[in-house]
Length: 228
Figure 1 (cartoon, one colour):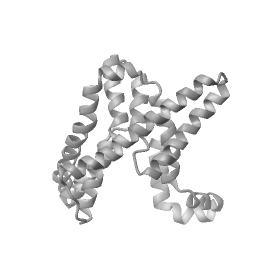
Figure 2 (tube, helix red, strand yellow; figure 1 turned 90 degrees about the horizontal axis):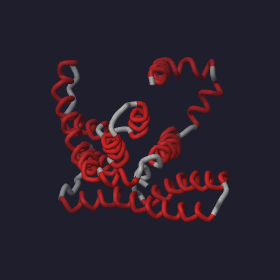
Figure 3 (cartoon, helix red, strand yellow; figure 1 turned 90 degrees about the vertical axis):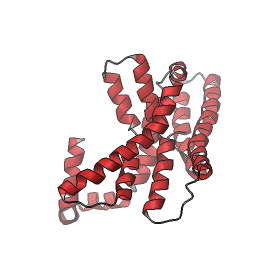
Figure 4 (cartoon, helix red, strand yellow; figure 1 turned 30 degrees about the vertical axis):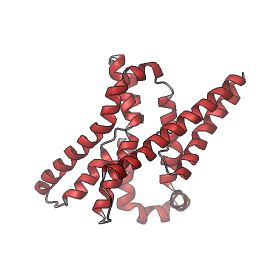
């Protein structure tokens, strides 16, 4: 992380002056890559799959209530806590930012990173129930986070948005419910296929295919790829 921050600062500060002259091919390669698609569309899905596959479904069922509360109400509370905190702290740093933009940042930063969480939990000596709660929340908060971020973003850019319970509920149902339903269907089909095949290489290829294929289907249906 420290190396990534240092390299990013260097590129922002000196990239345009140094890279084209010294590393022309690298500069052209970086400009040709859609990093959003590579990170969010490819790498993230494999990392989430690798983490999610190690969560015991029976343990998750036992902790279902706290996981649902943390991944929904927890995201909303965190959004407002971060938003209010930024709104009152930033003026001391000489930065005046409208509250709606502080709230937008809160919505962006509130959902926990499942990749980092799962990695840390593997090293931490915590109880199984706590590990399941935290890991489950980090995997399921995506749907609620998308809804909160979308609503706040529409308010921030001045678009008229229906803030009724029905419209927000439909958005949450589409993003989260659709993503989970597609994931269950793909998971069931994949498990059936793998039972019929007694070949390690084919099993690996099937799992790789369902991760990328699931993301592409979710993107076309405009539902949550990470939840899928």
